[in-house]
Image (cartoon, rainbow, N blue to C red; front, top):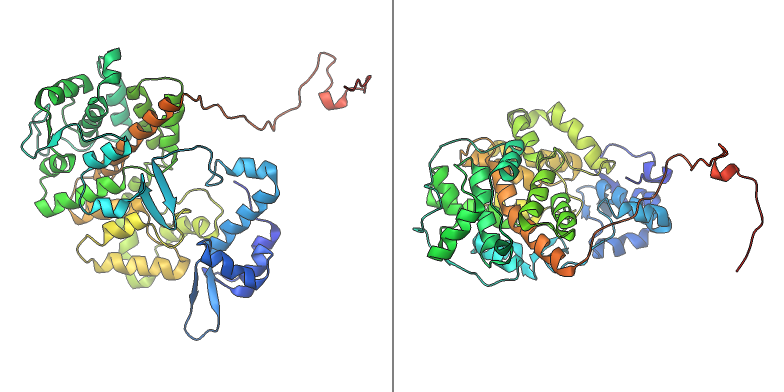
Length: 437
């Protein structure tokens, strides 16, 4: 990741907020330019009691300094495209704009208020809903409440690729095939007996009816109808998020002409990494420690994890707070946390983190909060994230295959120079005749 220039490390105190003079010095601009950045949503500004003028979020200023430096340096600009930088692929699926998330032009938070994951999936796939949603529709396998805990990412990946799946070529062209894959993923993630996607397809073609996935999860986890509604909204808000690591992995595999089943498996494989799908496990493992600190301040483990996130010196946000695309707060996490019953310890922690760092809770944090608040089994937060995101993986695979484009970027070589037969490096060879055309 590109590092900020020495000016970006100007002698500042440990506050998450910078004065206008400090922010302008880090960015190397006049103070008047700061207002332009605020109006474009690139910086957060606020007033503080007892002080004149505005202060600016340090994390935003550091991030903007890196971006400005990349623009002035073509090599760094190319490098930054892989790290929250310049868009690299055209897509009509999802847009992050003005601090909001849109699915094909529809505000995701508005869809979450009423739509099911299946309905949002049809929107992302640019299809009409091919079956009727029916709470009494039979699943391919009988739903067994508390049959098993959710499968861990590695076990889920093994189940996805390790089953005796029969993948006929005609299945790839069946209208209901994407929906069958989504149903299969639900059983795998939730720890249910696994029905092959081929069997799922056969049942859907036969009945044309489907029990919504949030209802199936609610039955497995024995939640109330009100809690099942929270699961529904979480699944919708996890459905897609532009070119995240797992969606990009899905597109790369799909671009080779691989099957939809193989492409979705690539997304699940990427999600099994600790810097992507593993975030919920990190947060869940520290939950008691972080929320026990209360008014004593942030727990040492959380303070350490937040340090690099706040300073903008790491490309990930492993502490469950902050998001490079949402400086003013992730609308998905804010929406989901507002659905939960009040929790004094949680609210105290969120206040403390914001006062100390200026960072807001991430989607990963909100999913673990749902797991805790609803009394769901360990690993349920990952199930919600991965199952919702499966809809987006399928959308990206379909869009990429339709484009006919093979994704094959170039690498910027930084290794040892080529060695010629004479034993000398290319740069050391004596100059010969130069023939110009």
